[in-house]
Image (cartoon, rainbow, N blue to C red; front, side, top):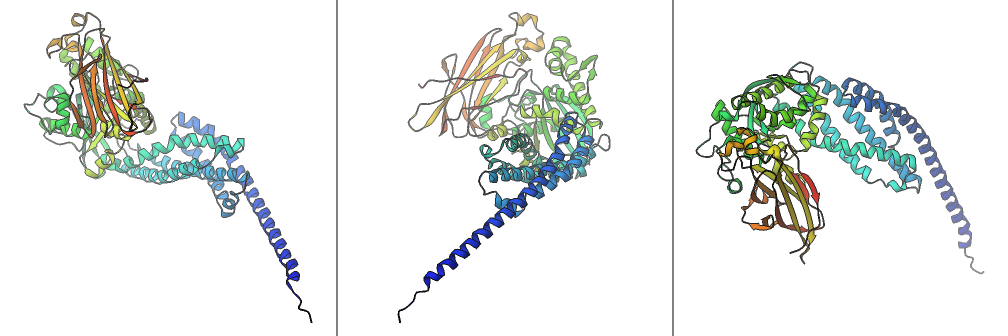
Length: 590
């Protein structure tokens, strides 16, 4: 009998199984879509319930009403949590691979999760502790501060992860309503996440700084920008703040006049710093803020304070009158010797009017009285912590606040963050950052008349890809032509320090990124000899210029970048009374 082949009969069976499999897949897909659709509708309802509270929340934050902010976020919390839960199950994640709908589902999931972090991981645990910080007048609750630190650390990790997820969302693939929501959330995250990331490490050490483990002494240097230094101004007034279990008291105040010049440096000064500014850095207390490395400043200030108080501070801080003005915005005005100091006039009163209107013997007592009054207001328990944070944000961004600790674990945090001082800020600014520092060599208070412009440019001139960089620093004097006779002696210096009365002598310093090659310095187009050193880890040059009233000079620094690339220079500068204009310009090869 002929052999029969059974394979033709198997084909219909395989087709039927394929059909059943496809049918089942379609059913599962439809079920998944239906499941996700239902959960999406529920999530939308939860997010819709949050929308009316957003404007109320913005208003409460603007009013700095912590209690109201706390109430609103607690009302939002369960809705945001439910939305995050509804959009995070495995079926939702699986449907994100679908075309068109998938990217929008992913965006909603990421947005809901990030909102959940902002509200439930950050705001809800943080706000009650912030309100507890000032529960007792004159004292900061260090236990509440520790819980604030815990909340910030938890939120920091989640926000960084969420920020990464936000970056993976393609806005071009989103429907308009989802795209708008993602854009708004991205703005909030980009503002909040860096603040939390910067604050979290500092808040972990804050209880210790405030005496959680015993009495601490913080020496605050109040700089005077009328006589400019690298970090802002001369070390004019010293304030000893004593903290114990969060209680802050005023230990003592001293002016620079109480520290006579020393025959030799009171502490070790790097040879590179001495090469830039001479041997006066460690022999005159006013020059403590000349070094770019704030750790050197702190050691100098500690040594000077030891000669006065016979004790070493645990912490050294440096601020300037712009910081005092910011504090006055929170504490309210103070009146000293009949002068009402407000946030708006404090800088001018301290740096200009005090020298024009007060007798020499009354100037230092006036500065000390102002510092005492502001810090007493600050420590009486009336200042709102949220208002303080908001008020200090701009001075902090401008580099007007620096902090150092003698405790190694604390300094490890401070020395790697925005409070670390000029050289740390320079390092944090990246591989294309150039720092321009100004130091007065007049020995007087002429810098309210100092006007500056910093112009930078870069160009590819070399075959190895490294770029030439030029930093031009224009300095001019707006002093009246008869400054020598029309201005008081404390302003002009009487011409006693080698600079004619009414003139301004300034050391202009530029610190380049690590590895940069120094290419020479010229003043008004004429090459000049300069000290070229590596100071605080940065290749650095300096030149001194002398200005008569109304005169302008331009110092040009040329460099060869350490690496190939096309990035434009980032400019940092000394915090000054009159901040420089920052410009950019094309440059030519030479």
